[in-house]
Image (cartoon, rainbow, N blue to C red; front, side, top):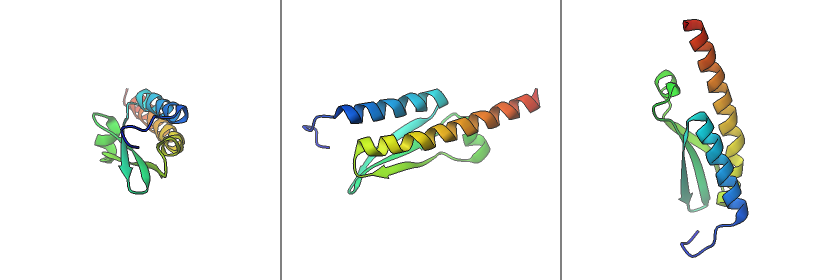
Length: 96
C-alpha cells in the first residue's frame, strides 16, 4: 500500500476484528509488508506465556493483501488465546 492508496472497508474491518481479539487476550500484533504482500505476527510482552514458554512472538498469517492476512490471522490468534487462557486458569487454580 502506498501512502496515497485508500484503505478499503474490508481491510479496516479485518484489522479491527484482529486488534479487538488481540486486546482481549493481551497480545500485541505486528503488521509487516513484504515483497509478496503482508505478514501478521503476534507479540507477547509481559504475558505469562513468555515466562512459561519463552515465546516472544510468531507468525499468524502471510498473504498477498492486508485484509486477507488479517482475516486469516483471526482464527489462529483466538485459538491460541483461548488455549493459553485455559492453561493459565488451570495453573492458577492448582496453585491456590
